[in-house]
Length: 396
Image (tube, rainbow, N blue to C red; front, side, top):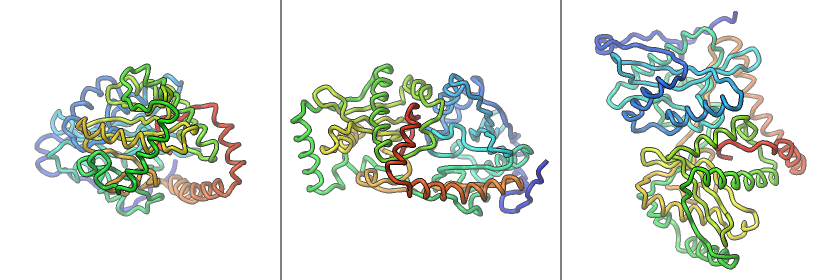
């Protein structure tokens, strides 16, 4: 059995404040169940700053997809209750990495932001201390891996993360639709004229039309087209994503497509799909999960034109925030009104976990550098070997 690490930075004793003790604070760990889903929805309604990636809809869709793909997800849902009412819910899961057991956000690799749900009006610090103390009490976890933690996330204030060195730092561009005014307010007249020229050139190939796809089956068909475009684009550039080859990819897309929050838009030219945007809408925020375009129309910027039209749709649909997610590619920054820092963290809890964290911290960057240094033809060949599987809804 591996020895637990005693580090004051993340191993602390939690003492409930008098008011939480008086009101009966209880910390539980449960697997995901349909009964829990009802409580999950209830705390979501009292957590206005929650992202879709901690929602019951997202996590439930992922678990149904993995089950249909024949995969077993070991879920750990941390719940802190005040009396009988949940005031914190943290969806987590466990995977094995060699001899180690790693705790991570439920829904990896599809989940784009790691965080917890905390009810409005509650003391965030006390509840996070309670949840973290529960995690430290699990004797079977070697490493806690928290990927894509926003700087404004609730868990970003955890002392364990404040004292840990981030293994990866990037930013996530976003658009405040109220400031962007349909994408035009902060754009130069030169850029707007260029987009209009692209639209006129595209119209030479046929009538240009924008639509929000409503029917669930049609959503799946359009996303299938987007997958073909994205795969071709990735193969040509020799790009790789952890989520690309996940066995639950197909089922996850199918399950999400049945949900009213899943939004698919497309730009057509002469009735043919030129570009597709897929994302999720919740609490007035749209999370842009993937966008792709038909390379036949690439010179006319169909992706940019689709984003331009979609932002007009957001302005007319009570969507006040468009989150492009990390990483901060230039095509996202072109539209953004701001960016927020996003970091990955590794917190080892055992000696084995420390060794794995050191390995991952060094190996991942080295492997990425090695892959990027390979000839484009070799990277493209590697992608072709993996292209038999479609990707999950995930940014590239």
